Image (cartoon, rainbow, N blue to C red; front, side, top):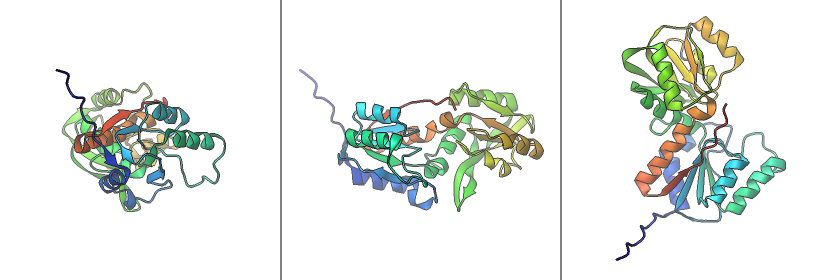
Length: 260
């Protein structure tokens, strides 16, 4: 006797968007991009959700190829300075419209969310406890801080961070204590957060800036940079897992590392 094919869960796009907005607290963040739906798709019944960090043409073409109904990205198409849809922006929009999928973006909300955010997921993978919000912007957190149960050697923390990010791109500024107890995390391009980490043993972010070298050295703070892309895969993956376990939706991760 042939087995019946498994029924694929399906949700209305409005229901998913409402659930995402509520879970990620999208409307609470002041941002320079539109958090939530940026491009409305033609398909209103959602079965397959794509997750990606960026919104480049290669990612969008893959989403179209894999026939996703909804694509959730951390970096979106529309930013504060966008004034026209020409060139690469036209190509990106054209691909989205041809694919028929909705583009949903979660930028700062997915950095600072204390359940599914980039920083909190990374903190848990590193084994940090007593987690709390860190690095506030307009009243909302951009990251997470926590403590190791027992002080860790700086080299051990670095090795663990390399392991969980899976990143060849890595920079460490060993300007603080050799034993690490307290850690602040703000992923992506949040090197400015070193000032908020001045009383912590270690600050972790993704992408360094030239000025952070002297800032960290003068503040006597250890800094580790795990890569912008790699430190921001955690949030979209966590959102995908939440959608799968909560609503039974099919999810696909479109991985396109930048090496940055």
